[in-house]
Amino acid sequence: MSIDQQISEYYDKLLKRNAGEPEFHQAVSEVLDSLKVVLGKDPHYADDGLVERLCEPERQLIFRVPWIDDKGDIQVNRGFRVQFNSALGPYKGGLRFHPSVNLGIIKFLGFEQIFKNSLTGLPIGGGKGGSDFDPKGRSDREIMRFCQSFMTELQRHIGEYRDVPAGDIGVGGREIGYLFGQYRRLSNQHESGVLTGKGLTWGGSLVRTEATGYGLVYLTAEMMRTHKESFGGAKVIVSGSGNVALYAAEKAQQLGATVVAMSDSSGYITTPNGVDVDALKDIKEVRRERISAYVEEVGNGAQYHAGGNIWEVEADVALPCATQNELDGESAKLLVANGIRYVAEGANMPCTPEAVHYFQANGTAFAPGKAANAGGVATSALEMQQNATRDSWSFEYTDGRLHQIMSNIFKNVERTARDYGCEGDYVAGANIAGFKKVADAMLAQGVI
Ligand code: GLU
Image (cartoon, rainbow, N blue to C red):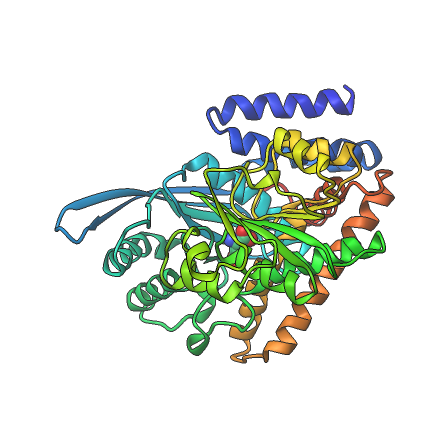
């Protein structure tokens, strides 16, 4: 049987066994596509059912999360943790609280996390979790009660050497605090290594808050350097206005770029004279208001476009930092027509396959999320190192480590693409480099 036939057989089987999970199918299909070239060159990676085992989570947990809202009514949500692969280290990956969360979404995120975590070069496996809980409009006390109920069940499945959750969409410092508090109470131990993204006075790491956004810009700068360009003077679109987007915008502007547009789920703002990141942080993170407030409060040429498509703005660099499939084929065409030269994914799988192919076919350098947004989880692994040695590092030292990790990821991805005859295809480079490390560990550890 040819490699192509073998892969399409795996994929057909996967579609049948995981019906109704389109995001998971999308994530697997993209990786399998890149594996064709690996299996052609190194056929032993098809041994021992390796590819089938890699696509099947080691463990999938689904649990009830009952809690009492401010009116005294009972609410019931669904909690998930998918422990996908621990060949390289304890399961590691965030928790997402968003009404769109279902098993398929968590499986896609967990699957991506395996390769992302492998690319960091640090000893972490892949996992992901979350809930269909919608934090929007909920009071602090409701958030706390939800987190306590969620952790009451999750606590039996996690631990420093087993599974180390962190944040993702809807889970930031406040939620990690409530989750950690409940874990500490139930376990009667101050086990700081059980969660990352903690507060700075109780085991958290400097730079963890900034890490995904900063790391995205460090990697993008490295990619631009190979084309003899830099952020200096570049116009940048950053979609979203959550943790990743805010710190990506901050770092891009520190490097001399102008962030010309940002968004939230209600619409986007254009900021031809750059974004005042501190003002936007106050609106989005402290007051939790809509992005439209920025225009009234800051002005400086900013305009609000209710419900508009941010990808119609003209720029040199696009950093999609909101959510999966936010940038489709049509938007990719708009960006290319407007002269976009670099796209790097700050969110997980924000570009549809059609968009990715369009960028690659039209000379836009494209960095996939597995590589480009790995800075968050990499700094989580640095937080774990500090917890294990009961140490806390300076901002400069930690930021230096992050910078080094992102440069190494890009070099590894670039070199791997070249070694496998697909120079400049950073999707293939990331998938292949991430895969090989996990695959070697799985083959060495036997059929489990
Ligand atoms: N949720 C982030 C990601 O998608 C970070 C996970 C972590 O720090 O464990 O990689």
